[in-house]
Image 1 (cartoon, protein in one colour):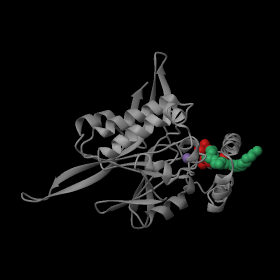
Image 2: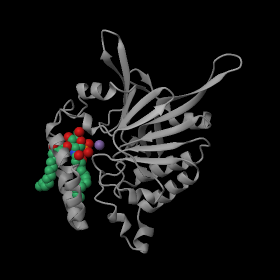
Image 3: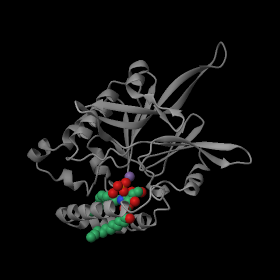
Length: 298
Ligand code: LP5
Ligand code: MN
């Protein structure tokens, strides 16, 4: 598969041929909910694979893990019986198994689940991480973020973002009764879907100046949100021929390749560690980032 002239490796090929080399996995935009059981099943299938990887260090979820999150109490205050029946319970169980296998789980907020708290992440011993988050791979610094903050041409969204991401707004929202928050989330989703139908694709994409500003102090940018998976070369300084990479993760979507079956597809990122021989006596380990296509038949 080609995305902007970049070959995207097949995920199952990578995990079967190089299970010992995989160090980190980065995903975003799963938009999980009770209404999308196929996406939940696909996520469980991914975690199951990751548990079996012997040298996996970290799983990063770069936002919009959930379609909407109105507060941790929506899950944490369930009765034992309700919890046992809830679709999130197997997810938390599998993630706990992944943690036990030695992999750290790092969760970043997206524009749909910015109310996830550390209390929820404690259920699987995960860590809520700030946005942006800098990951160092050897001598390379990778800036990771959800991606919505880079869409600066989308003025109405950015105005909404300033208000909704303000800690005072969030404090006041979380004090409201659960049902009122669920109703408000539904209203925001409806209004957002209506507004998006009249916005152009270019307005809802990242702004080039915002990308260059984000990339200047680092070596590489990795984000999701736009649902346009690709590897871009960004010109930082044309005079000195300086370019840097921008990797975009894909959203998880259910598709029907033909009428007989359905599958979930997503472009995710994987880092692999390679041993480079320097000379006869010396070798160095180098970790590199790849976009890979993850497919699960449902
Ligand atoms: O997510 P995506 O890609 O579809 O769209 C985003 C922007 N939209 C949003 C809203 C989310 O999609 C839905 C939020 C889910 C609930 C979150 C938790 C709620 C907490 C509150 C309750 C406790 O982020 C969309 C961008 C798009 O990305 C591309 O970048 O364009 O932005 C919009 O469409 C926003 C609108 O332009 C402005 C929305 C104003 C909403 C005002 C709410 C008023 C509610 C009452 C209305 C009667
Ligand atoms: Mn998003």
